[in-house]
Length: 213
Image 1 (tube, rainbow, N blue to C red):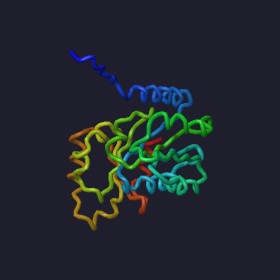
Image 2 (cartoon, rainbow, N blue to C red):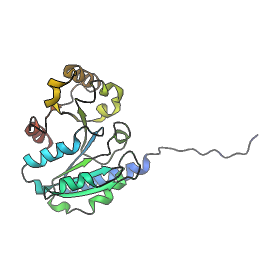
Image 3 (cartoon, helix red, strand yellow):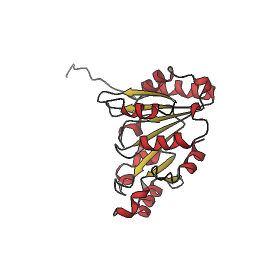
Image 4 (cartoon, rainbow, N blue to C red):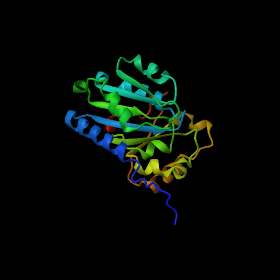
């Protein structure tokens, strides 16, 4: 009989869950909502955030946590709106973890914040698996990506509490079936709200803000 030891890993996400529970306690105590925006690279997440900042009341009570593999480009783009913004660089990691968020929250004056938006690393898979203590995950999907992304990456659309379809101003120039995409989403998560937005034309932004706040 072999004497070789066998390692058993039980709930490898348990450490992340411990940090996320700490974050949930802080948000509840401070009465803060936090949304985790997840979408592919180039889906328009940062441009969407710019539109929100231009149109939301009291933007000074909002802060943004930016997640990227490298560079602080997105945080620099948003800093011109005179908000609290922090850049988290994963140096190769495909997602943010709750400990990243917990550490970043220490940089903010949470007594004067009512809304936190996380822009997660561009990825439709890994970020959906990690609870960051957020109020809700929001899936972002652009019309340039193809209408079948929800059925290719169903976990995100199952976990999300809302879907934002971006760049709808490009629909006249694309071979894209918006109704088919919406049907795919509804087959996965029937009652989920879906916002069709154009950051360029400021379309659908007000309705999205009303839902967020």
